[in-house]
Amino acid sequence: MGGPALALAQQQGGAKSDPQTESAVADYNAGNVGAALAEFRQAAQRGSRLAEFNYAMMLLNGEGTAANVDEGKKWLRKAADANMSHAQYVYGKMYDDGDFVGRDPVEAHQWFLKAAQQGHVQAELALANQFLDGRGTSRDNRQAFYWYKKAAEGGDMTAQYVAGSFYERGGDGVEKNLNVARAYYAAAAAQGDPAARLKYQQLSAQLQNAAPKQ
Image 1 (cartoon, helix red, strand yellow):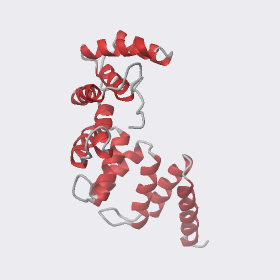
Image 2 (image 1 turned 60 degrees about the vertical axis):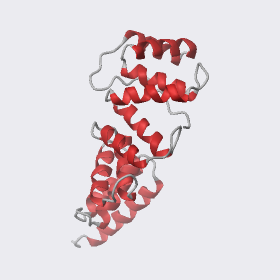
Image 3 (image 1 turned 180 degrees about the vertical axis):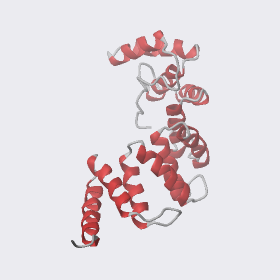
């Protein structure tokens, strides 16, 4: 799975902090993975979503123990079912990529949607890509744009570029607006996207040439 990172600072949805989970995070950051694993397990058994997720990741990645995919998937699903948006995204990505499970883009779509509806930016981007490609759902450019725009507003560089391209060409329910497109390209360029920087420069020149001469 490429070793997805632990959610070391995510007490989502107003969840109360859990001292044992916090201790586990500290141990993990200090490199004491054996103690972290045991503490995450105990906190997970008491229902801490963050601990459930982190325990799952350690099991899947074989940190502090031999990898245990079946047990890891079980705890990841528990965190996702407990409405932790990052767990929902990672669980969906597992099905989208076919890691540890058979590839199932329809199943992935359901989990991406749950996470995206909670404002998870990576899930919003993944959902937009699915709608654009017709993967796991029917192809729907309007829905794709809706979620690209959400992810762009959340600061995702790729989504900012794609949102800019929608505004640049118009259609699919999007009114063509080169000024808005330029703003999205500028946002992506500021994050280091060289293609967005080029588009920003091109649109800047185009708008300047189209401006009425004084």
